[in-house]
Length: 165
Figure 1 (cartoon, rainbow, N blue to C red):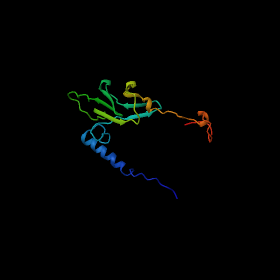
Figure 2: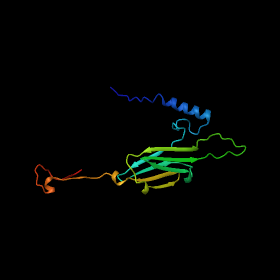
Figure 3: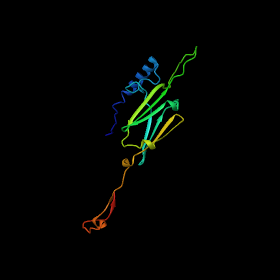
Figure 4: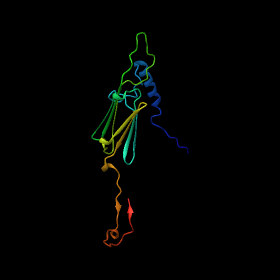
C-alpha cells in the first residue's frame, strides 16, 4: 500500500492566489491582501536567532530611512516600526505597477527570556535592521555541578562519582 500525504490547504491555495490577484488588480494594493496583518499595517519579515548569550533579530525594511525606524522593548515584547512614503507622481505620470510597500510596517514579538536592553546594539545596512540583544545574566543557562557525599567530605555511601548536568 502506498501512502499519500494530503495537505488540507492544497485545495485552498489556488483560491488564495486568485483572491490575492483579484484584490490587487481591483484595488491597487501593493502586495494584495495576504501580506497585511489584522490591523491593516504591513508586517516586517523577521529572522530571530538565539544563542546561549543573546538574541539576534533581523528585520527587512528596504527603502526605509534609518530615522523612520523605531525599536522598543517593554516587558519582554519587542516592537519594530518602520515607515516610508510613496513618491509623488509628477504631472502626466501614470503608475502601471506599484509593488513596493509604503506606509507603516509593524512587527511585535515576545522574547522567551529577558534581555539586557542597556547593552543592546543595532545596525541598519542595505535595508536590513540587525539587533543584538544580550540576555540578562539570570536568563542565561547555568551548569550546576552534582556532588557526591564523598566530595563534600561527609563520607556517605551510595555515590557513583561526580557528574555535571
